[in-house]
Length: 251
Image (cartoon, rainbow, N blue to C red):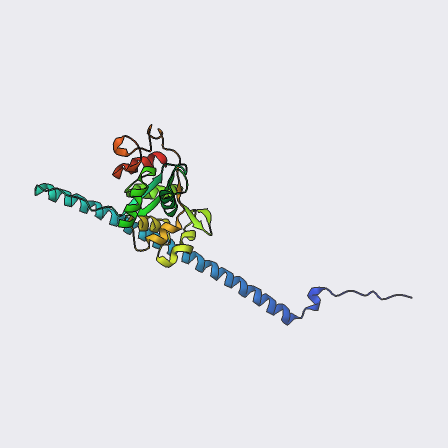
């Protein structure tokens, strides 16, 4: 007797033609949707980059106009035989010089409030009456002065870190800044530099977003008695515009 062979139908044979057609259509639709989403994402990224570049150009023009205005005022004062006195700085950069040994409780608490927890830590600080009094109390343990635009930009670009969930995150991408400061109109590192340098309305949020700067010892070392005031040949206290030279040596 001959036995008939039984064949197991394949999966493709089991599927009905209508089901196959629907599956192919859905796959094609999903591919089209993914391609459209990718195009929209590239377009959004391009628009965002164009916006960042436009803002950077605007900031550059603003800085140049400020410099020209300062030069014009100096020339006008000189021509009239007067002296031009610049406005008091709104921003200072503070660097801690001394450790925790032999520091009174009050100055130690002020250093904690300023986020200067270690030697060579640096922070930006809005200069007000209250912060000026705080700096007077901790003057033997810190050095400070108003930074220029170059110092602010180099510090943030080279040694800037974000404080996110108590973690120290490098500023490697503008998306990190936009995620946490986008609600304040700060979407790029240039926006962050501008907000810090000009002490803008969202300075507190921008400054709190930055981790305190960890700086090395300056090239050439400190003075022989760095805890003595600057006017006496040391390093402590207000060094005014000379803070920018110190930042170059430490950055």
